[in-house]
Structure formats: structure tokens, C-alpha cells
Length: 112
Length: 112
Image (cartoon, rainbow over all chains, first blue to last red; front, side):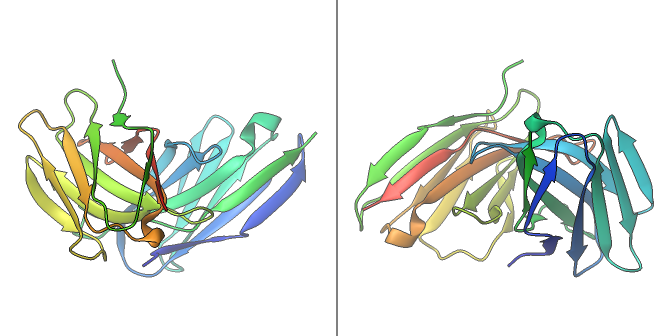
């Protein structure tokens, strides 16, 4: 079963605009991670935020975590054509680091 | 350093057959996880192994089994294949200190 649910399922924006994707999850977590996948290939780790952190930055990426609402957001600023991909949130359950669960993903398309 | 390697990259089987997929993690990583990804969906957790022991199991039938070897490589076996087993099978190598997953490019299984 899916622990995380991304929203929206699909997103199309113009190059240069910012893209925001959201993730909601159901149970307490140790950390939340975001991954990118290009065209059915392997997933690439983008950023990890721990349950005691509220915001994290990495280059053009900004991730927030609200444990009271069990939600996270991923912001990609100044989008580029190369950002076109599927984005997944993944949660490591509290006391169960052996099981990292992925959501269904957001398909992001950057229009030229 | 080499990344996560998986073999074979593509394979075609018929219903009822058996398949073995192989994974070599990043050097120094002692834990691997297996995921099944059906087209358009997020990766579904199948197994996690750490130091040759099963640490976690997802909601998959007993037709799915796995093992990890002393060199930390791993095999995923699926018996009595069904059409619904057609998917991309992903292996992930765990970075122990951060919890990040590093994925291989996957094995794409088609069951006819």
C-alpha cells in the first residue's frame, strides 16, 4: 500500500516558472525523501528531510515538512526542460527504517 | 565508484515460468531493497535485506523471494509468473548513515 500521496498527479508549467508538488502521508515518520525518475529509469535521490526539520534547501530545490499535518512540499525554482520527470516522495516509518515507502508520484512537464 | 548494477536489463518470460533478477549494491553498502514498479505507479516495496538477513517484507505473495550474499549482492526470484508480474523491478542500495537510497536502472520484466 502507498504511504505517501503526491498532489497534483500531473503538472505542466512554462520553463522558468516555479513548480510545487505536495506529499501527504499517514503515519509517523523518521524522515521523508524526494526522488526523481526520468522515463521509467532508476530513481535519483534529491533531498532528505528529517522529522525534526521544517525546511531544507539544495540548489534550486526547497523542501518543507509539517509533521502536524503529515505533509511535505517540494518547490523547484526557475524550472528547466531537464526538470521534466516524475517526482516521488518516500517515507521511512518511525522505528521501521527497513521499509521506505513511495507515493504514486507527480509527473512534471516543463514546456519550452 | 560503480553505482548499483542490475541484470538483466530486459527479459521476456511466459506465464508459469520462473525468473531470477540480480543486483550488486554500491561498494560498502550492506543493505539492499527491492521494488516493483508498474507503469504509471510508484515503486512498491517488496523486500529489504541487511547483512544477509531479511529486515522487511512488503505485501507480495510467497511466489516472491530474495536473498543476499556475503558480498552484499542480492537476487530476487519470482516463481509461477503471472501477467500482472510484468513491471520494472528496481534494486536500491542503502547508504547507512543517511538513509538515502541509490537505485539501479532496473530490470524490465515482460510476462506473456
